[in-house]
Image 1 (cartoon, rainbow over the protein chains, first blue to last red):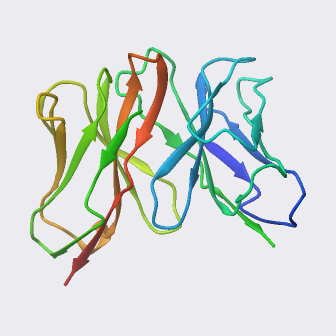
Image 2 (cartoon, chains in turn blue, red):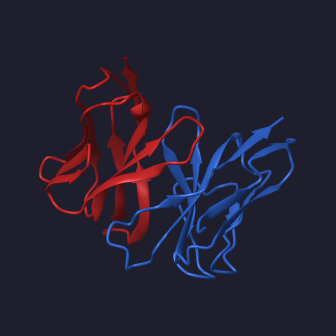
Image 3 (cartoon, chains in turn cyan, blue):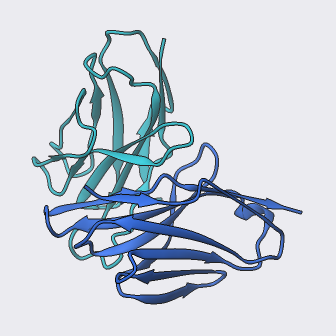
Length: 115
Length: 113
């Protein structure tokens, strides 16, 4: 079955530690995205990538880093510079410019808690 | 920047019709999307309006008026399983070249028996 896999589902981190969230898709989608969701809030864009080896900052990129070395993979690193990293992180993908609706397909999310 | 406003909560009874509004302050976007998210789950795509007017998909319909900077999601024949959060989102920004969705803060719908 095609889909987006995020891991880990739950993650606990001590202050000052970097942590990397995995996102893998086998949908052959060109574009991939990372969103952050806080309780009772909407989704805020962290980073996105339209093609391999290219990515752009979203609205809240500070304290985060990404890479896009393979089409299938778009890992997100939450660095110690992110002051309030506890949140629900959602990875998504979509077809490239050929998509008519721009529909995003989301993974099941990774819930990060900083102790 | 782009901003979208939605009511924070809406309550309705089973079998009824409910409308969730979305007003936005942005221009030059490609279209307006709607997503549903159950508690703890991933958002799922419901509907998309590229042009002004009404789009119907089963029990769900979505409307866009660019001249009024306004859209809405209409849910008919409400079922208990429709209890969820609903998000509007604008696709892209022709002014900046950004090709990503910007989401509203979401509306929590509670369907009562």
